[in-house]
Length: 321
Image 1 (spheres, rainbow, N blue to C red):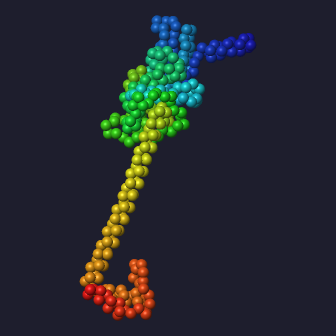
Image 2: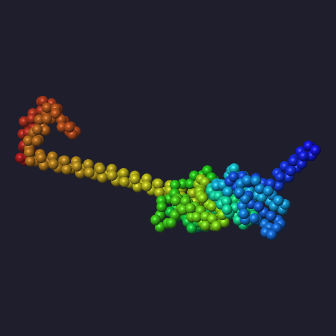
Image 3: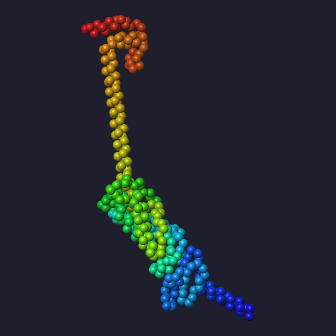
């Protein structure tokens, strides 16, 4: 008798465990039925707790926690496959990037979201949601050029494979006031925010709240675009350096001219002073005789045996002649 009770209890426990589902906190239970008056997905979500799974019924759990999923080219915690987002600019130049999306499922719309797509949550993220993210970003980037002032044309740049993730983009060209934006500059954030708003309008009515979307790292631009922008940047730097050298040489030449003019003016003033005051000549002769040389004198006659009076007389005679 006792053994029968034990066996009955074990059988009951097995039956209960095999026919019940526990919905954890942060999840909602979604029941589907095969029989009854309304087979299919039942639109009443099951809250956290213990729920009985009858014959022909299945209860699956759907996460409603806020979650961030990164679509990346490199393997990450979400999988090893390449999930990068590809898009192009207004010239059709291909590029790609990694994107992180933060979202959550509304608790009162989890059943409706599952009924629409009939996919487990991870498959939904990898499939319909990723496709929607890529399409929204592509619609916005196709409105903008990759670079406004890089002077790039379709004939100059052939579409190339995306650059490697460890290739840093060059400094963006200066902003052109006639250009609405550029993907290698501030336009990348403008396009991303516009794409996020489009996703919110698309998925909000379906019960999926898009909270945030961000670039993960830099956009992988085509190598041809990076090379063209780098060449233009180098040419501008060389032009600025050449202008600086020209300005320096011009400044040096102007300084030499100013110095020559100053010396000429000093000579003129000295000549006028000598003509108006002959005693200056006598003073200079006395200084040379005594060995006192002017600071700017190139030659100096030194010696006390020089006849100052004779020199002065000779000068005066030459002046009379």
